[in-house]
Length: 168
Image (cartoon, rainbow, N blue to C red; front, side):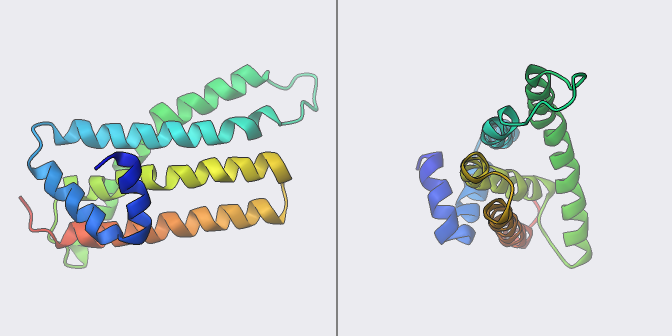
């Protein structure tokens, strides 16, 4: 199934999707490459969702950095810094799951987190539309809340399912 179809299906049946993903990874000849693609695609989509809000920032001070610099720094952060942080977060989550009796492996923990980043990235696009259309205020706070709850819920469900798998 296509990635977009699986993303939509993640909101209906997250356990089934992560089980299918873990099964596909076990038969894949390069599972880490697939996981990295999921992570980088999700981070890039999140960056794209932030572009309209970054371009709408008011230039208040004369010594404020140019918008191109802000876009470049944000791009660098989402495509180079955040992936490293996500790798560390996945390792910490795996250690925490181990402490609570998890039997999965680190690849399963990475799969759960990286797939969640990709699955939530369309919501970040919608959040960017809300930010552009309504600006700061209750609508943006509601959008941030929805994205945060969706991320946490999908990640916890995926991590629990990944840690049920026996270590390979």
